[in-house]
Length: 197
Length: 197
Image 1 (cartoon, chains in turn orange, brown):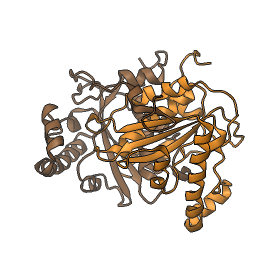
Image 2 (cartoon, chains in turn brown, cyan):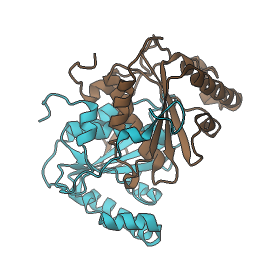
Image 3 (cartoon, helix red, strand yellow):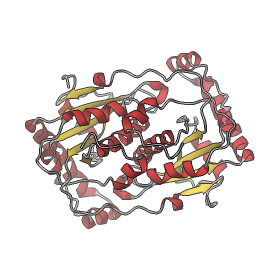
Image 4 (cartoon, chains in turn green, red):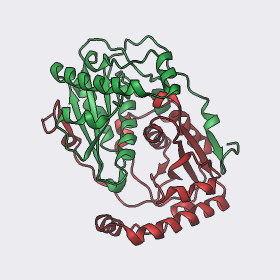
């Protein structure tokens, strides 16, 4: 399927939906490396390329990551504000993160906070990754653990690196529909705020 | 050229280079709207879609934006650290931002800071925008003004919205080569930091 004719960016963006449930099937790590190859071409503050990636496919490592993430989520869910608590409940999101062990691979993304616009540049590059994974028929979820500074040590990452997200990657078995989006026109103004585009 | 067969994400990412010099030629605003349509499909914290866009093509508005941005850059360049000062000098980057009036259009991107992961989500969506513009043969630069809170009022944007970037958009006349990127392999580890992928 990797040799199918390419899709437009808008097609990739439109069909792509968040996946929380993954098939336990083999995926090609080269497809994930392809997405990182694309990301490494992204622009960044002063072209410092502040991103680093840890590709995780070792089952024991996935278990350790899940355990430390779930510890953080238990703390977070205990104090979450009412709006977000309601949204979590409506989406059946709890402190449990089974996708961290169910997905065949995880991609942890870090940014070097000593570099200019490190997080902004890295999230822009994550946009490239998500579209490139979709192109290779791989699904993901932009999961950022609560208190990521407590998760960073599991990877042996140096302290100047912030853990921005952990992307579980695989074939989606998620039966939920894509979360609805507002019509894009309602987010665009012309020349001044609130003026019609 | 908009009907040419689509390119892969990696091709778009690889050929795309930052443009600081723009042709004074007409561009189709629908190509910019296409990129926003793609961005509006991006994932976001709790699916709040925190982004807003102001598409600027009015010459007087561009002049006002340039004037207020250049004021901020003068302040910033006076106090910039030695590393960045050297990088600016090597790239001939000064407080002057002619692309803000030379480019046929500007796209100002805002994020609602009251929403979860507002900046992260918005920069991910900016990644989508950049690839979609490249697909339509439009060039851009991820310019974030220094002290963006002083630039926000020019757009009449409400105070909870942070100005994340202003993308000048047009046909590139920039003769500089693409800034070099590290081989992507040097940014990826396997299972643990510093382990070869």
